[in-house]
Structure formats: C-alpha cells, structure tokens
Image (tube, rainbow, N blue to C red; front, side):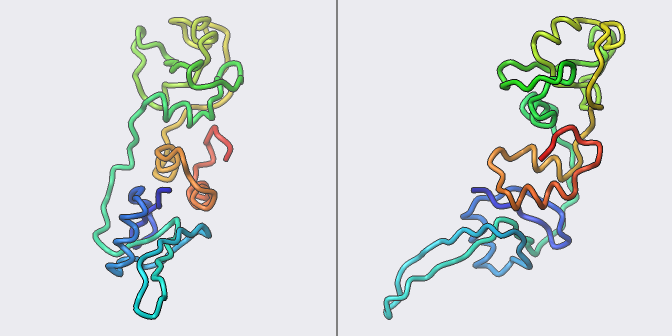
Length: 182
C-alpha cells in the first residue's frame, strides 16, 4: 500500500510507503487526513499489557516546504496505455499491453514529435494499417483527442495499486478531456 502525500495546501506531492507515513505521524507533521482507508500498525506492549498502535490514512497532508514540481510526466508506453485505458484509439478495441503500440499521429518520419498530444494508443493491427500516414490519409479516425495529463492525472498514472479513496480524490481533479473512465 502506498500513501498519497499532499502538501499543506492539499496538492499531491508524492507516493510514500507506510513506513514513511508512520514517520510523518510520529514526528507530528500530518496536518490533516483524507480518505476512508486506514492502515493500522501494531507495536509492542507496555507494562499493562496494552499494545501500541498507529492508524494511518491513505491520504495525508504534511507540514513542510511546499515544492513546486513541474507536474510533467514522462511519456512512456506504460503511462500512455493507462491514459487511454488500454484502448486502441482507432478501432476502440481493449487490449493487453503486450498487444498495444504507441502511434505517432503525425508520423515521426514526417516531422511529428514524440509528445503526449501526438501519441495515441494503437493496437498492432491498426498501427500497421496506418503506417507512415496521417489518420486522414489512412482514412482512420481517432475516437478521442490525446492530451497531456495534469498533476492529478499524473499521480493516478504513476501508481498501479491505487486505492478507491485515492482514486476518488485524484479523479475529482481530472480534466474533462480525459479519455479514460475511472
């Protein structure tokens, strides 16, 4: 389980381990908690036989320096396929990652860039059929408009084992242009 760490203004900062979160609690750096999922850590027993425990929330906001991250996320197939919900943006088929490829809408051989807005998830069949053509030349229409993930979408893409309350928090800030449905 990873815990979503927010800064004191409520913006996502990073995914942290349970141990790192426990340290924040013990150092009294946690300002507020969100989410309903709790992780209980159990410790030793005192001389009265009472076991110590620490309850951690799945989303915590911590005191400290507010970092201004660029919010950029590297374009890689893992995140691209996740952005597009493992759906070919040409035939609308849903595939396993091993059956998908990255298609450059404007082919790189024709000056297209390797960017989020010029990349689409494509099944191998559709990518082969499109070849070095634009979608218009290949008579293939995109079913969604590729986009650059915002900060909240970035954190969603970065964690494969995201909890329901973490998904709810992040998805409430997703842009309206997203191609995936949570």
